[in-house]
Image (cartoon, rainbow, N blue to C red; front, side):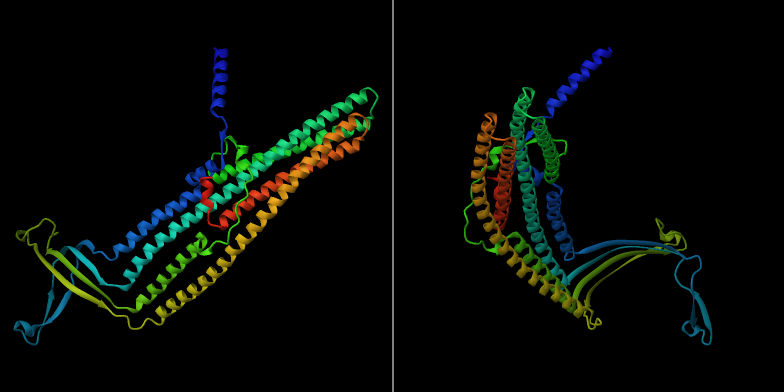
Length: 447
């Protein structure tokens, strides 16, 4: 039984490992996953949903307000009133009288309807504008998520490319070390030459381990950015990283950018805030109505009749309520001026944002052009370095080059490869900035 359980455990573990196969993750897959699962994207959607409830809350102020009320009171000691006896045919005397009953109860319904309230009308317009603000904010949040995911995605790719290059370097270095080892064993090489090659092999192995660690950390960061469980294994296809230079067009209109639109909508909200403050200068008019049922007697009125000494009666009223503000200690004026200052402040933010958006586009185009040139040069440089390494390795085996020449050639080839992958990363990051500066980040979802 013990062995059977062990065998079943091994089978379960093998099946579980197969179930945890790596997920192929293209950039589009990563972006879509992030928009559906990342907390920031979900919270932005919730704010849009909540804005509808804010509209309903403000709208309620324009609708009738109906309330029901009731009370039950008992007066163990009733108030005594002093009355002039002349009213009851006893001039020159006073009468002590107790009015009311020890028990009284009242139940009623009241209604209030705003007929004119400028703050309510302004609030309704502001609430609708608030929903539009959160819709734009949701779009901006999605763009920020897309930018962050794309940047991290390309960084993982570059690290994997570096690892691939290091693995090739390790194979070449290990092969050269084996040759030196064979020469040393045959007395054709010095021990110091073998030691230098062993050091070189160890250094490359250490670099591989460091890159492996960085890849793990960067992959975990990418999973965090897209809201994916950290334990999920991912595979990034190389085909997603072909260099296809973007067309450099005229500078886009910054007024179409989400950042600009969000500020303009915020300016609109501040205008409503100012109007809401001004509304405090306006009078308000409302309609009120109520209906009540009143019972009183020496006993608890509930469920009692006149035969028990308890009497019930009803009463109602309908009225218009006018409120005219006359003087508020300059508080309303101060609120209006504060709103005006905030409006002037956001106007400065809008101007600064326009300049920043123009700068982003200019810098992105410059970086794209420089990156393309760098990639072309580094690709050719990498080809030359590999050719030099190949020739130097052949010359070393034939005794026509020294070990120092071979190591220098290997270092130059590794450096050229790293420079090439770094140039690719610079290009992809610049590409994201260019797409962002044109307000087209969402096109990455379909490319």
